[in-house]
Length: 459
Image (cartoon, rainbow, N blue to C red; front, top):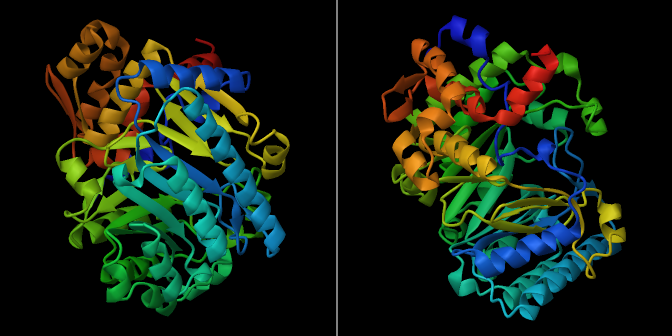
């Protein structure tokens, strides 16, 4: 789709506003939120929530190499004892959580499991099996609809892939980033197309219900033409899902990003054109466009959830919406349940010192107000459904949307004038053009951003 240059100049496409994996966003959470707050919230969730099912996230922190682009909470080691130490701490935290549930006679109902990091595929198979054994002791896998694993192709072989399937993994996510060898060299992530082909033979592919590729644009040495070639290769592999992410260059936050030659990076305008072209290619390849940056084949559960307006948003990204709660373990792991958000201690070695196995290693969190809950619903419905039904929102929370969102409604006509929204008395609907500016629309409902703007401008 061609976008008017005036719109790109006015809004940008992918450079402004939060991605809203939570609301409020993590930067608004409080460092004064403690493990006692977390425990109280978890007890309330167990005792009072009508639906206390949740997704379970496990963060394993180690990787085989340092990728220069990586913004994840990851560490590099080739020492077996370091890898085992991290696994032991994870298992200790799971033991403590499991005992917390048992002490309250609570049998957890886990609908989804996601093993991320770091690179959980960097675990030796005996250690991987130990992790799965612990999960099986905590979770009734017969209730799990989605058991996902993030895979670094450099750490596995075809036999490993079969082993994962034997252990119950049914969805895998490959960190591809780019297929251009020059780009791979520049970001220190060399993994050939042939390697990926060897890991996704028809025999292996049929053992997994869903395969996702993570692709990054805005990397050094990428051009629009080279990135088009990468997307064409992706289309030939035909993964069930594609996550198309913008590289965020933050060398002041992630020091290893200084290893990237900034002279080899494209400007924001070219990144925007890369993104637009990639979207057209993926839509032409039979993918459904979901949310901000996700694409799925029509048969995939994510596309089916989008069709029926069940998609939800969490720290993993867009999900089929089976559950809205998630509990995470591991350094920096985030949780959301009931009205509570929390994040574990971020630094790996501080995580070890936080008494893992004897207490919850909480670093920050947030207890949502009713206003937070209402605004999250509005933001998530826009991001997930591309629409917001005022009557449904009003009925769900027993509010008068006309009065409650009076200030927001005064801003929305700007998007209507620019062809990004259609608006009636009852519903606002994001247009195909508006898809590319959906974060701008969503942030209208973010009262925390509004307060910051008031502070900045002194109004």
